[in-house]
Image (cartoon, rainbow, N blue to C red; front, top):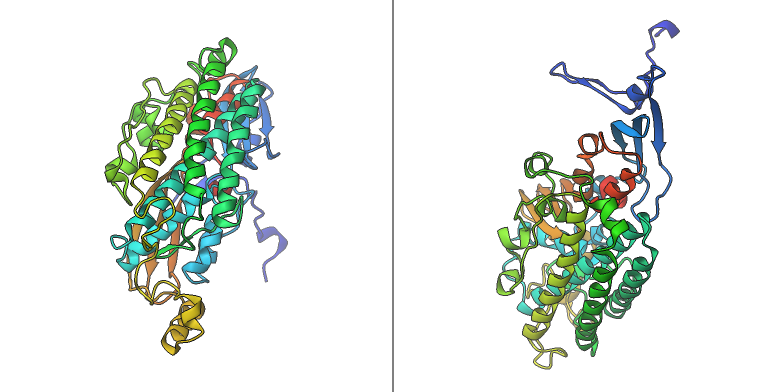
Length: 431
């Protein structure tokens, strides 16, 4: 039996030594670094509005930041381990809770990863692909509207938030009409969609594109040349091209630093290769550039949605009866009327619901261009309806990794601007 003297009590916030002998600083180490000359300040872990529960441990010399350590994990739910204990379809609702500002896009990214594993990603019906693209771009607009509105409000521009939230409410109305839910949609299914577009939905979406374009212009007039906003963002938190690449940033944060990389262009999926859109790229990589990139991304999303609606196979109301699911009874649930009248359909439904799709053994990775960056899913399958291992590449988590080198040298008041411009969601970061 161990004596009291032999038991080592370790501070969970402390760092340690890696196997290579490199000292790893931890949150607890920073607290012990006080020598009377500097102040350690806890920013969080209170909920700072939209982003979620983040704690940043900041060491200050006067008002200048000398060290910064982000402390994550307050929203950890074990999504990846949960996925390994349920069927592929059962995990779809959990993806809603990642970037909860863009649940429709999360659903699509996960479904495409599983479909790649099943080998059916290139067999999706054209109408399904176009509807998924429309959903992804609506999610992008929704996430950017709230991100920019909260960013502006954080630095003192309250009016902008009222404009962006009004437009975002219209997207929620469209989501409720389409999926039956406003927030956690769970609309996508492995091999297709839960249902086709309801009558009148596409026309209302086209009307929304006209309305949100006006709102984007209004936000631009309120912010882009606003002296206070420009002073709070221009030259603040610059990320060089090399640093952005070194820290594996993706999405608007990477493109604002001058890197022309967008998964929709570099590795086209769904029907993106058939649509025309531009990828906005910044030059300085500061908070102001990150704002401008997201502003233009919303315009490009509107452009994509308009093209997708115009090219939608079957038209707005699908009078031609274009399918929205792959024609494979071992992947997609059969129609309910056939389940109640046919033995074969009944068996397919029973197996899919109880055991899930029969995925082949193998490993796949699929990354999609989400509002926060590249949302990726790595799946290790040993066969059957449940993944052996599932890993989520959360862009918010990766983007926050740059804070220890980005915040030092800035003033305490700049932290709010920098965090707002990075636009993260802790539900995705912590998973």
